[in-house]
Structure formats: C-alpha cells, structure tokens
Amino acid sequence: MDMDRCIAACLDCHRTCLATIQHCLGLGGHHAEAGHIRLMMDCAQICATSADFMIRGSEHHPHLCAECAEICRQCAEECEGHPGADAAMQACAASCRACAEECGRMARPR
Image (cartoon, rainbow, N blue to C red; front, side, top):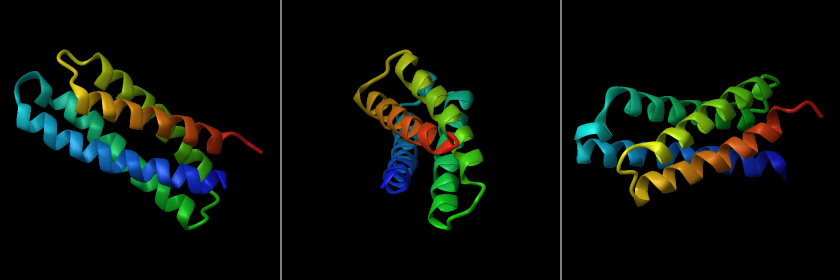
C-alpha cells in the first residue's frame, strides 16, 4: 500500500537524519554548522510528524506530506553538497530523496 511505503520512508528518514546529526556533531567544524544541523533537525521532525498523521489517518496528512517532501529535498541537497560529504551524509541524502518521493505521491490529490 502506498501509505505504508510512505510511513516507512518517513520513519527511515527520521532515524537517518537523527543519526547523521550525531555523526556531523562528532566531526565538528563545518559539519556542525548551525544551519546544517537545524535543517536535518527540521527534516527529522517533519518526517516523524508526517508519519504520525498518516498512521492516525488524519485528513490533513497530504498537507504535511507536501511540506515533508519539500524539506526532505532541501535536506538531501544540503547533505550531498556539503563540503566533505562522506558516506553517512550521502546515505542521509538518499534517505531524504526516497522520503521526498514517497511524500510527494501522498501529497497529490487522488
């Protein structure tokens, strides 16, 4: 089912962003810049919230999914384009892109 795939993608992205935040904070320097960390925090939170709305069957989930897709795309671009993007950041970008794709589908009217 489409919604189950989207929930799974959101939860994976949430988990991956949180892990990548810890990774980046451990590296320090430009990896720990406030804007970079804040974007990953925003992404993790909107993913968890979107999953929650879908799990509860909220009629508002398409709005959340649209915003989630936008933030996930931005986070993916940031992680891929960040100076010194390593394997963990590339994995975060891939998870964000997968979530953006699934949430984009859920945001479209049926």
